[in-house]
Image (cartoon, rainbow, N blue to C red; front, side, top):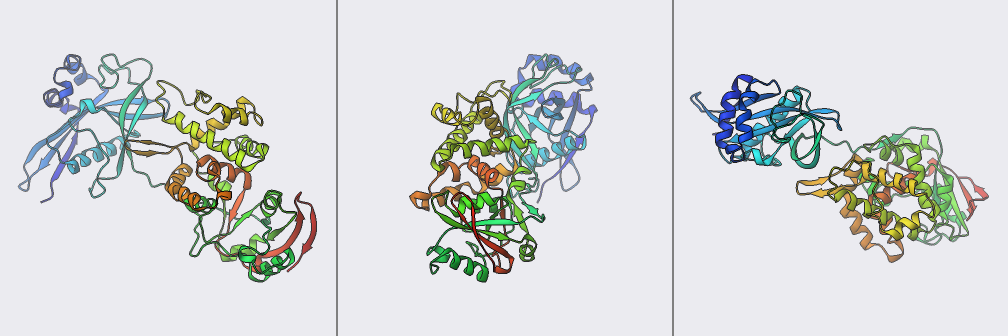
Length: 476
């Protein structure tokens, strides 16, 4: 038979709960400061208590657990928190525990408090990630080593801040119980009127293996359009966009808002003397489905309000370095350095400490400084840290933004795709680091079609030289 529980919260419960906590929680059993504070806790409005009863089939109740709740402020997050000062459970039933944590989190949210903070030392059974099969599984549990907490002025004791909890906020190492939130990884649709471009310089290769000149390539494109590299449907989500940028076959065609970028790709970075710049009509292209804007999809999926100058700095960095491998090595070096930075225990450091040089290899920093100033490199590192860097904890992977979540979701696929690529196409800094995809998206202003680009969507094909100078225009 399914167990049933009754959750109660009331200030009148405080005397009984405090006695139970002192008796049942090993961390409080001999805690003189807590025992001495009990009378003041009972009289202080900074605390409330809760109790959980188990209901039997005949309607009788038996005590299952209880706890004491303190109210706290998190100045950095500008929110209030429920601090679970102490809690006890009668048995080891994780599903029953998940009911209690679920109810406590609901109580916190009803009071406009953001989450729960819990110290394992003052609870008989610390919260853990709920089993997906449990009924009450709508929350997550993460460890935060630096949760900034400030107690109210009428607090008299705190499991988190000690016997003198008042005063300035302090950092606390604790568990956070947070509500589960569905992450929206949808891309942003492009509805603008501007033409889109694609560079093409292959003759006698790939889909143009039977073509002997650029004129023949253009003729085939006018007739058959541009084929997607994969079959199926492309719905423009962030993971799908990143997969395609990572050369994983996808049912979409890459386009760009920049004719110069199309020249770069068509001439293979200037290695070919001539190439085509294909001009597409977005209005006709949309008849087959939405067009997806990679830059807006990325920029609107990060947590920080980034300035246009942040994106421009990244473009200046990779463009100024010029050589693909050299730029990729710098991207990889900075990305690895920031991953080390966010995974290191910086006691009491702020997010804007900017102490990045200790974590980025010196030769990488020196190479980047040939293009950007030290202050500008620090700004780039800050963007990477706050919006993109991810790290693994014992509770799982922590990401700072939706874009970072999308990258982590497909990261292994990108690594596998790079391993399968020919040596000339292996550029780890570009293709297996989140900074590489950030840089490509900033530089290329890429757009994705919904599948195959039909021939009727092609307005013209321009023959250009390696410097982008127009040599001829071919019409359908």
